[in-house]
Image 1 (cartoon, helix red, strand yellow):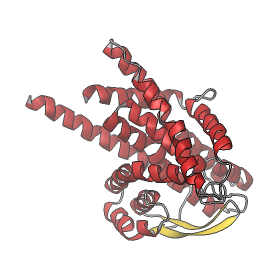
Image 2 (tube, rainbow, N blue to C red):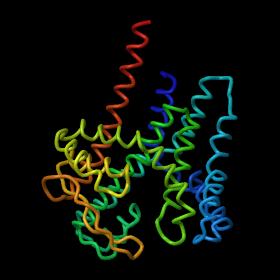
Image 3 (cartoon, rainbow, N blue to C red):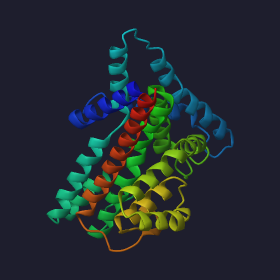
Image 4 (spheres, one colour):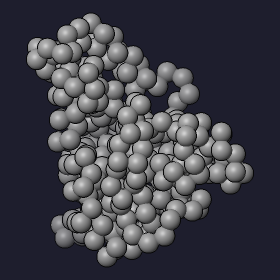
Length: 309
């Protein structure tokens, strides 16, 4: 466990120092590969056969990569740990979240509405062309809270549970859900396997992160929002994370949004005041403190284990 913690910390440091690679990111290559597979296999989206083809495509896209990583077995433990750290670094994106937050915040602080819409569009799937500053703030904060699960917390959870292969597998699963997990005519059947497996893999990490948001913010407001509002959300995992995050920050999120030309009335999440520009930084700080909390708990457990031996 101590070597796993060292690998995790090094991966986080690499992410903080380097950020996401600007060129040749493995996940970009994976996404291109998945698009090719989808193009060939998703030829009958209205047919129930598409359910089976979607499962085959999912397996073809996700299973080879953790298997390849597992074949790398280096005798030198330090070099193996370095290799694992580099692979894990490619699976997380905390600095990317921070950079996008800063880009959005700059446009909000200068009251540049067109630029704010363009900046927020980079991190959300909803349409931003008609959003005002309040809606843009909400969208950005929701993205930070939810992507804190997908791009940071869950990959680290699966790394600690299953090694670097688990982190790679999770990121492949999560990327396919982002690409195929839409309830539209093209992906309703084909993407169902990808969406369901992503739900399963995020179930435990989402609730641990929701609890972390409560512990690192206003606990009782976060807990009350989680227990009373999460079930109103369509997503079984985004609901707890965003409701707990909104409550812990004592702000209101949710409301109507347009996705792919269709208006969706999302439930109101959280309590208290309307969002302000500085709440973007508060949301990122909540995620950061949640990570530090778990690093401290893991370190404490390791210390107690070796202290009792």
